[in-house]
Image (tube, helix red, strand yellow):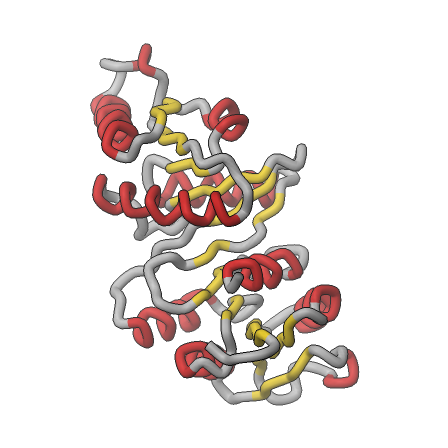
Length: 254
């Protein structure tokens, strides 16, 4: 990590002004470096603490600078997911990425949710690892350290379908081994007391995330990747702004 003022990178592909406005709104205590293709950004719109780094392959430049320590943390911004995350996996030498999303309901209730990627959190050991890492993030953000494990139904639904039965049995096991609580399918109750919610699998977690943020009036503040050596916050290109994701990255540096 570099000494002195922290430097946080963020990627720009589309909606350049949205990213620049987000960067300008939070820059000051740290410098923000925006990665984009040449000609994407009007440099006159960048503030004093916002740098523009032009590169033919901004995804690779962002990851290269992160790994080399030229920036202290990175936010995906509006860069395409596939190429950016592929570059990150290759640089870190991992075959998958584990993400924990910081979400906020329309009523202002914040909580962590994982897994949120379709290839994440499919096994009991993977869920237990996410619980361990998620607890540390919850503590850092001042969220409740209680963990709620979701399943595909209520306990009274046992016997209605084999997949529901299997989901509840696994949730019971994860809750017991992870010192957590099996909250059944009742996510609306779980978020009231739990700072970290464990979805049954990456598909349902992704659906929860997308429903809350794109249909339910809630907010996604970014999803730190927790199985790599550097700080990288994944984001959705549909996010209204990236100020919170940049602040999230900055808070993880503390």
